Every structure is written in C-alpha cells, then in structure tokens.
Length: 601
Image 1: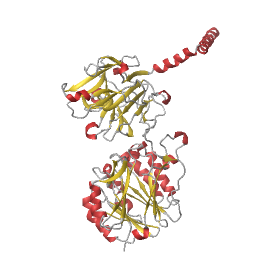
Image 2: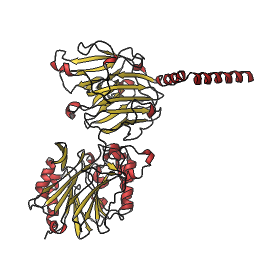
Image 3: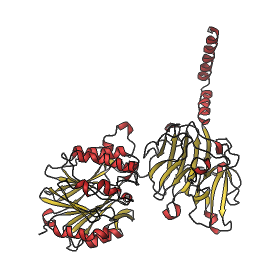
Image 4: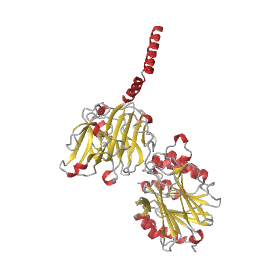
C-alpha cells in the first residue's frame, strides 16, 4: 500500500512539473475540460457554412463544437413565392459589431405563403440527449423592429420536436416537449418537459425591446432552471426539474416552434449564435459576460426624500402586481411591508392598486396577493383596489377576495357599485377631503350611473379616479406621449370632463409609463397618469409611484421608488437595480394651485 501511495505521489509531482514547465499545455487542459461540456455550438455566420446556400435551399451549417450536430435548411410552403427570397438571409448586424461576424436574419410571419427555418440533421447526437445532469442553453438574438403580436407571437427560437402526449405520460397533451419562444407581449418563455415530471415547467423573462440584441442563458443545475437575459433573472428559479425529455426520431428546430407535432410559428428577427452545454455553466463561462441593455433605466441609489415638509402628504399608487403574484411574491411582500411600516413617516393618506392583482386565476396567486396585502390590514393602512383584465374569471374570485365585504368595516370606505367592482373612499389630507373613485373597466357601462351619482353627491371634494384602462403610451418623435383608449374616452366624456372636481386619473394595464395634463370643460387641468412596470425587470422590480402634495408651494412631486431594491444587498444589485428612477417620466413635478383648482363651491 505504501509503494502505491509513493507511486501516486510521484505521478502527481510529475503532472505538476509538466504543467508549470509547459503552461500552454495546462491552458489546453482547461480549455479541453470546458469544451467537453459543449454539446452543440451553432454560429450563424458564412464562415460556418459546411456546404450549400440559402438561395438553392440546401444550406448546411456546421456544428462549431465538432460534435456532429449540423443544421440543415428547411423550406415550407410555396417554393415559387417571391417572398421566399427574403425569409432568410445573411446579415452583417451582430451583437458587438465585430468584423467578420454575421447573423442570420429571419423574416417569417404567420400565414405567410412560404417560410424557412433550420433543423438538426437526422443523425445529430443531440437529438437523443437527455441532459439529466444539467444543461445550459445560450442564445444571442434580437427581435424584429416591426414585431407584430398577430404575426409573430409564440415564434420559436429553439424547439425540441415532439409533443408530451407521445411520452405516454400525459394522454392527449399536445404541449411541446421543449421550446424557447417569444410571447405576444415579447416575453421569452422557456417551457420544457423534464425527465422527472409528467408536465411542462416554464421560465419567463420580462418583455424585451425590438431591434435590440440580447444574450439569453437558460441554466439547469440538475435540480432547478433559471432563465437570465442580459445578466438579469427576472423570475428566479423553477421548481425541482431534471433533464429534458426526448423522443426517438425527433430533433431540434432553430427558428420554428411546434404544436401537436406540427409546425406552429416561425421566427422573425436575427440569431447570431446558439450554444448548448450538458452542464450548468457559470456566468464566467457564458458566451457573453456582463451584458447590459442598450437603454437601461435612468436611476439612482442616492436618497431622495419622499416627504419634503411635515405638512405635505402622499398618495401612493401600486402598479400592476400580476408578475409578483405569479412569479416573485417576495417583491410584493417587500412593497406591502414597506408601506405598512412607512405610511406614517411619509404621511401616505391612501394606497391605490391600479389592477391586475394576479396574472391568472390561480388560487396560489390569489393567496400570494392576500398574504402581501395582509401587511396593510394588520396595520390598518388605508387602501383601495381596482380590478384588471387578468382579475376577472368565472366565480368572480376578485369579489371573493377583494369585494365590498373586505372594506365594509374600514372608516374611509363609503360604498360599492352595483357590480361590486367599483367603489369609493374619502380621506382627509391637508386642507381638503379627497374622494377616490374606483371605476371598473369591465363593468364600466353597468356602473356608470352609480359613478355619476357618487360624483354628483360630492362635487365639493377634489377627486381622483382610478381605473385599469384609461391612457396608454405612444412614441411620437422619440418622445413618450399619452393617448386615450376607448375606455379612457368614455371615462373622460362621462365622468371627468363635466365634473370639475376630478383633477387626476390613474391607470395601469398598458406596458409602460406616461402622463399628460388635459383641460376639462371648465378649462381646468386634469392630470392623467399611467403607471405599469410589469413588462420590465422582475415584473416591475418593486417600483411604486408616490405623489407628494405641497399646498404651500402649489406643487405635486412625482417619485418612483422601490423598497425591494432598497433592501437588496449591494452585492446582489445589477446595473438596473435603482431604488429611485430619475428619468423625466418617473421623477417630475407639476404645478397645482390648490386654492384656485379646488374652489369647487
């Protein structure tokens, strides 16, 4: 035994000597170890064309990992269609504007006469790979500038062919085995049928911008999966999952999704590279490290006071919480916990939820929301809730959880509409009694006479109307402006224009933020504001909108603050983790001559 130990020790010494004597050899050992985990590496560049051309329809792109997972071009539809010429072409546009680096530009759309995508060859080893020990899927891509949800939704970037029903685990289930696809809201979905479960498990990203390059990494460590876009994981880890289920005779598609074993939506946009490893790669091993979006938020982690004078007061608006209820409840908890603990300090007289409390009618999501909002109930913090389009479902779960019965014992609550979805409250703040009127988007017509009656009985009270759907953002000459929705037009015509006491409307629903000032029939200003961050990082990153009322200076101060980021350890913060957003749409002030505007007698 001693002799064996001596021989082993000598062998180790010799190995170390060789490594120090020949550092290049050591480097090659490390590179070889890393490259062993790369199963497929598809670089969409002319330099990696194995043979054929796009024009002739026989293009073969080599697997740069040298593992034999080559891709072949597939053409569908009318081969004589003139549109086919532009469905796939080489582009000099790439992630870092590098020399001699190309990307493939796809121009497919739904119901087109012809289309093109790529798939693995029949003998590709990756077709049967199960990835039971983990995996990393990376993609460098961008969405087309002309993205249209009716033409491009659920288009596939990468898809494993086949359906769950063919596994004999879920009878009749058409859901695809695995796909990396783009939703109608430009969110990235990774949904995969793992080896250890009888159903698909999904990971999501925030809504992405069009015509902007992204690096995406889906990483599974053999237990959980995380989806990261440009260094940020918006919704954390999945449940316990292992592997990717495979079907014999099925391969992978690049640029096409499937449903029920049939092609579904082909990709539009650019793909520069897709790389797949059979283990969880660390961030330092990714194709791109420290990726950042071209237009990150303007913000600061410096302290900005939320109350500048002890005589001032705040109205707080909670943007759509649906992604917190469904994906990141800890953010919801942090928001509500902060409000509960800081309402008195910041003189917050009312907290208003602008709708979409949940993402879908899931009891788990409702319970997440209830647990979060319970922070307010425990401290008797005033709040009112508007319903959003995601909150309506059979059985009226919104009314069950947040209907009139929840508020009937709260002093500020004054009543609800015939549908139960509308309501109003009165709060004392500064020199005035303010009325907050919740106008329901779905029952707008049903409740409109009730809403008018509330306004007619309280013409002396400055009024804020909150509804889920009023204004939406439009880009004009590179500026965000507010536009009126059909619901918003009805609300203006019936409940705002002729009711001089209404000085502000607030809504959510539409992706983004916007505000404008509009004159009513009396020639007085009405502030209209959209606050919704659900399409941004982590479903909103905990940002809240506070409006400070300063009667002495005749000003309203608008601030956007995230208690979630404020409590985040510095080592966990990324380049977009600001506790305050500071651009012109998130940090601004407006004039309000209180005595003149609220002279309502």
